Length: 318
Ligand code: SF4
Image (cartoon, rainbow, N blue to C red):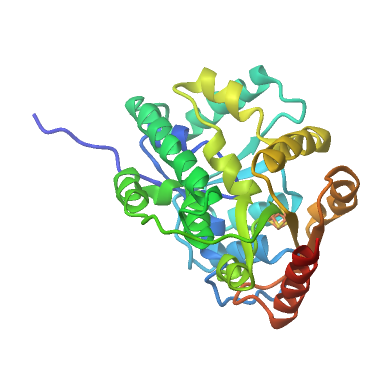
């Protein structure tokens, strides 16, 4: 008897969508944001460059996906609109909502809806495999914080936990090959907000004496997991970016104390509503804060390098 395997579909995601569930449904997640920092695309019609670039690339067929999951209720309204524009090219699209109040039952029903969209769970054993990978991710994060892994390498591997590069086995090998080194750290810095759009940002900060020991969004990618839909729901409903700001600040306060940081870089993106959070962070987080704003992808601009240097000098004096 011949066995016909269902073809694996490439599922575009616009923000954190539990990759555990996408893999368990026999599909392959693809975080459309992960191609942006290396992109040379300058979209004609844009607010935030992240969403405008992936929208344009999907519409032109430069990003090829079979289906699309747009995080519609969570952390980004630009993605909601650009996601709808991209879906007009005919890609089957599902809109995914996180509960602002953290209700695990609502989260569970969202995950069931998502699993129907993806064709239901085919490979439940992959939940456990991903739990194990996220444990490795936490070790990488810990070693980076202890100065044993370079901030740039740690960032690139942790940010890839959003989709595990679409290939669990290859991803396992990639993260196992990260080499330990010894880094002398003067200024321990936390990166909060959305990730920088510049592909060399962590290396530039390190070369200027600012060692990034925490990246807020990637740390959320490794923090949440589960062995089935129920436990995924209980865990992912605590995704801080989709919850009230007070909860996120409470989480950050503990995390930044624990990592003994000296200062914070708050990265903001042109035309992103998260910029409005800056004054609240300044009121509530008791550390020196440098706020920077990026726009188009590429190398870290000279003007931002000068501001990083001035921030390092200020930390050196304190
Ligand atoms: S930077 Fe802001 S506006 Fe742009 S994709 Fe991220 S959350 Fe959305």
